[in-house]
Amino acid sequence: MRVSKRFSLAVHSLLFVAVLSPKKRVTSTLVAESTGANAVTVRNIFLELSESGLLVASAGKNGGVHLAREPKEITLWDIYQAVETPDADEIFKMYDGSNECPIGKNFHQILYPHMASAVNAMKADMEQVTLETLQGELKTLLTKLQAEKCPAD
Image 1 (cartoon, rainbow, N blue to C red):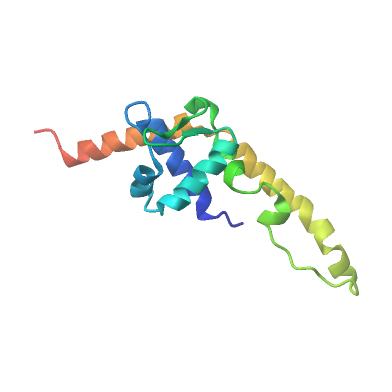
Image 2 (cartoon, rainbow, N blue to C red):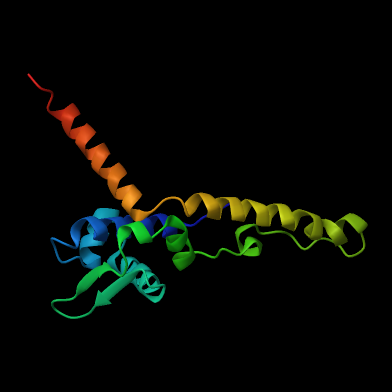
């Protein structure tokens, strides 16, 4: 199964907004610096996240973005759906098969339920992880890294 970079970029962007927006105006340029992505790409992700009700963006000189919902209310599945397709037919690309062969004619019919089941399992796992969860994990990691950098005397 292939998920594009857009998903990780969207998660990174929302995590960045969740951490910084209460204290600082967050723009696509600022997020682009953090992600290493082009600011136009980030703006396109912002648009999709806004259309999905995850982000609120305001344009102009004093513009910026902030979360549309609390971090505990935004799951990885919400983010995935905003920038990717949850359709098993799109996630798992299949060749057409041959109408001349009984296997070729029926292959999709027997394989598709298994692929749909995999998507449902992915959805169930991703619904358990919220942006708040990721914020906590980031805080723990940063604390650990800081402790490793500056050991106590």
